[in-house]
Length: 305
Image (cartoon, rainbow, N blue to C red; front, side, top):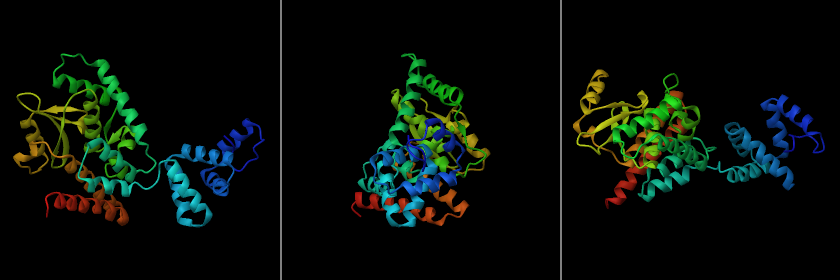
């Protein structure tokens, strides 16, 4: 692709050399001069370059939008073309629809948390993980054995793990970020585990225990629970109770039953509120708190209140 702010007839080796040596601030300055260039060749080059920047590209375009002028218009168009435009309205409409599907909901929430995320890429990674699980699964395997296979793939082959050193980083609630970094919250890791399980025909259910989100399997005479934050450890109900007691967490018998998709998404939003409060980002606190209000309104409307 053409270099940043360099003549198009420069030799490719020179172009790459200059680009590689240019600081991000230099790249931003060069790109800002090209944003409103109407040449199709330049526009395509700009689009490809910013796509390679990923999260830095999103920050750059949002800064251009805030700056106003002709560059702001061009930046908005690029955000839309890259699929990085604001996902807030789409997630609000999803909540108001009162027709919830787990994967769709978390992909939409992901666009709010991390607008540069690509739903198709996220699905592709989940498909790949599921394919690997299927390769290791024998048809007569029990649900417990199939869960152990998923845990082997996620936590040993792929090295997914709990985000312990930066637990309160809001990006740990992002599905795409967790798939890239291999680190996440209990809830995010459980959602990945559940979506992989569904792809191989294993039905698991979300379980919202206080202080630790888990998954439940209710296909056998006695249920068991998967703790994705503890590398897929399987616990029976008494072991879950002992674990919660050891952390001085109070719970009711209802905690052992599955929860709804709305409950899972609301808990994800509450996590984001807490993490943004800790960092002092009040704008994001208000945003993710407002989603909780939207769920309340959707329930009231559905119940005729």
